[in-house]
Length: 487
Ligand code: PFF
Image (cartoon, rainbow, N blue to C red; front, side):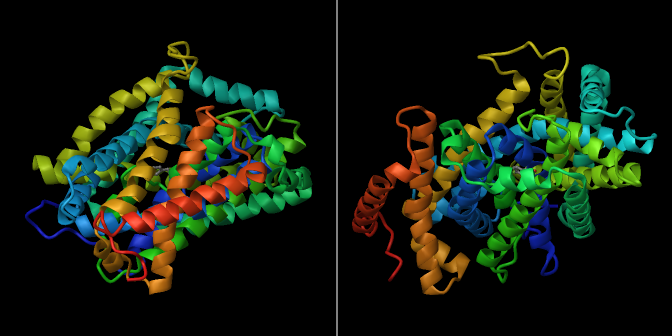
């Protein structure tokens, strides 16, 4: 049990945190969302911006979040408040923590619906596979699965109950065990699909689609989607990584962990792209099909494969497990907050959060059947949850984190937590102070339609702004309580 009076529970063993953080990062975001938004936003250029966002914004933000968590030893709300107080700054900054915690809860409310699809497909594979031969049949199976609210609700409820059951059991027992065998299994399944795609057509087109850079194909909405997805896929600005960081022993290296998680996450996403698109191109499907993409294309691939139903079964089991190791991380912030502030035991916190979650996720589930027409500005409830979290709360929360780290908090906090050699520390500081905020702001300006940024044409003035920011930032920072990196 975790209360503020007792020393905080910590991860046991060297690999536990790395496994848990990877388990959180690798999930439906990599296998369900990355392929379908890549399809929607036109491929190569989107992938490039996404990769840039992962390494220029995501990794520095992840290092910041783990440091904040470990320093503040609490839920995002409590940890940020403590660290901010330590630096003698106003508690208004703990809003960043609140935003993250609420964002994680909102994501989970639609995530359980998608995880429910995966659970439902496990069942379909178990009970004889999916009948039908063409794309239309697959679309029909997916649509039928969604049309009945009782059916879809059953699966999302099952995911909610499973998540709450695991987290209710406690930090170590519940979370640590499942990740170590699930991740290699998932990579193996993706490898199998890639090898199959190599021989069954559509592979060359896939490589061209994912990696050919066509600057003209990327809209400003696509850039914002790429940034939002970088946060989503690394579980940032939603409380998960920060709370996991709060259980991290002092001896662990934060920089190495963050880079390790980002690399593993990127490999799985790119592998998912390479595994999924061949079936799409070979069957003449539209890559921009939307959220149902993998549930329509993969069963087709499995059907024409020897032992396809067995592989399909294994694949959807792995995907469901990957979804669970992410969903348990999303609720951990809320749980930790309830335990520390409301005096609840972990099981009590799990079940009370679970009831609220069930209500909200049921509304999200209804977006695929009776609530499909309950729309506001053309988006239903499910779409709004996805849109608000990925395109607004996460980029803004990320901006809050880097501004906190770069300008508000004392230098010693991060120097101490990160324990990096001076040159690497300077790189991290440069990223959180200048590169990440500039990237986030430029992408926002773009998406709001205030100005259309094209990297190829606009890089000179972007560089100019960066230089001005660096000069102003370095001149100001000693006065706002921060020493420069060199000192
Ligand atoms: N990173 C997870 C995925 O890619 O599926 C999603 C996620 C987990 C988002 C935890 C946010 C979070 F806090």
